[in-house]
Image (cartoon, rainbow, N blue to C red; front, side, top):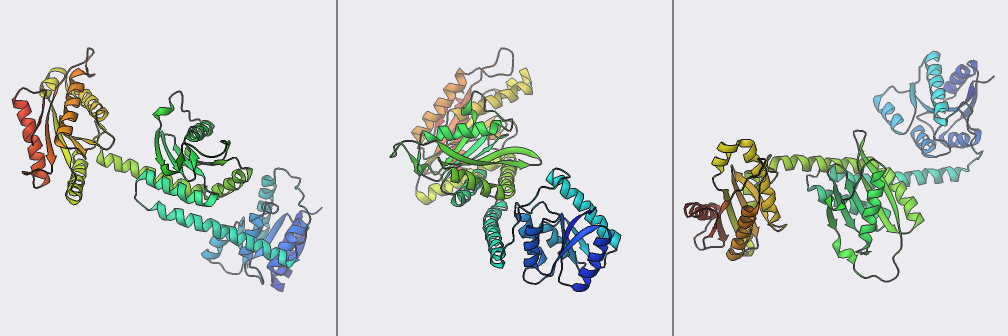
Length: 488
């Protein structure tokens, strides 16, 4: 009984004679192909259990034959052993890159070749799921048909590499995380067709939505709901509070309150984003109902899944490292160093565009007494609570930082003196009315604040603006505390 059917593809008559004899002595049925095109034809027509494939052959070389057979659903499970006369690492690399299952150098000993063939035949049986080989449909391709398959293969590989190249250029870009994700969604939307793209990161509870096509405003809720549903399959749940998810929206100009026609259900395609064998998020695209979109987009997303994950995960890790560098560890607001960078940018912007901005310096009254009486852990709770409270009194464009110790600084872009004073008063009243955690009964504290605005006649640089706000803060302390003073 035959041990199996082997297709031997090689244009060297001596190699074919010797190799055929070794295989036939081991009870294998051997069929021979003398060039790449014949090898492809016989692979489809004869249903071999394994292919021994020479690298250097006429018409189509062994690498190309291997890639075509491995990319076709009909033949992809047939084990391929690459055979070459050169013992070079580059040959082995390209052989394995094209999908070859094993690699043997000419000059092999018979036992070596037979051992590899036996091992690969067993592996091929395992892939097919049983000892009984699934029968392939018999077909013989004309030479033009083989070339057509090769061209289709090359087209798909060019398509894939073009997308991967574009995505790869983002992998080394140290730009904002959400801008990176938005760019990825833009690139992919151009490929899959104008679609609404979404990336949801589980641990960060962060969602980026890129609206690449005219979309009804109310449809976003449907899209988000579907993304949450898809995420549920990976163990992530939004629970009863979807508002806790931070959503960054790009392409808002494509959102429409009114659109012609009736709303249609959405078709979708998605991929999980997997890093270190763990699903960290997912990417999804949505178009008004279209089975073709769902099918084709899913195939394309599968091609780029690894590269997309790498780009997004790199951006996520870079953002996390950046946040650690610019954030105060206790209060989780900006630290002093980063505040100075933002302050300098705002100062230069004000000079260049002749805009106004204000600075508030804020200090907790009698904070040393709190630490001495209740301990530093209590003081830390007050600092954390105060940071959260100040943020709640500000606009999204405003910036708050821990300036040092119990002192905070607030930048208010596009804000004149009287407006900044009103903000300071709002903060002061909120602090006065709040009971901070730290003891069982809680604690009350007050704050003093100094306000300065630029441009101003007596401010010629950043240090003078800080000195002016500090002077106003000192005056507030000296004249009774729990007040805000604005120096014009």
